[in-house]
Amino acid sequence: QPVLTQPPSSSASPGESARLTCTLPSDINVGHYNIYWYQKKPGSPPRYLLYHYSDSEKGQGSGVPSRFSGSKDASANTGILFISGLQSEDEADYYCMIWLRKAGVFGGGTKLTVL
Amino acid sequence: QVQLVESGGGVVQPGRSLRLSCAASGFTFSSYGMHWVRQAPGKGLEWVAIIWYDGSNKYYADSVKGRFTISRDNSKNTLYLQMNSLRAEDTAIYYCARDKDYGGTYFEYWGQGTLVTVSS
Image (cartoon, rainbow over all chains, first blue to last red; front, side, top):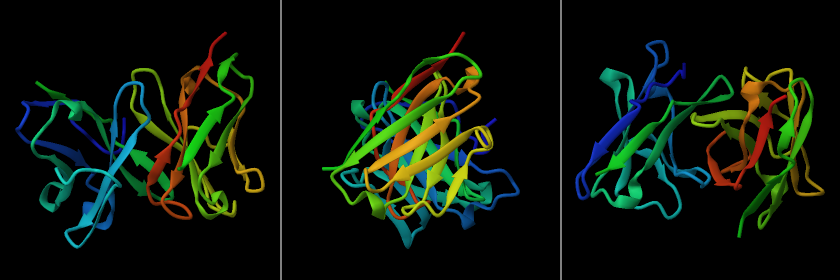
């Protein structure tokens, strides 16, 4: 079982927004970690999207539209990837990742379907 | 432009060894940390290993520790992954990825991957 918990699937219609979550276990405080997000489409390598530590410390991948943004919900110990104005090409698997004790740890991924 | 080209994948029997290579170009290879990340068929992404820009630090996922060795030759702009005692669960597409920095930030560039199949 991945350390980071992501819902297996999510769906939304074109033009709507999607909110993908990445929940850390209770003994790992989301506030202390950069949350990295990657997009994976079949037949292609993963693509780095962004990272989020705080509202003042975050970064967008090169060429990644501003429709993609990150945030955290400290009360739920969760990292969030928000995608606004969904387009058909946003249909993909999305993975969160953190660095934990010098090891990279991915979530199990969320398959986003754009209906 | 940054290019990463993996090679060395194939079909191998359980318990045997395989060495993957990743040829890098388009950037100063010796300035960046490098990673291996894999994806088993129908499964999610799994980080495998990291090597710092100068080879001074190497870290591994628990699932491969003691069996896999990451290395690099900065004179040849090449990253390696020596995989020993292979198991069926090591079957995956293996991607090499360049770090944003000297090591341990994010995977900024990726190769297309090479498929490793462990089967008798």
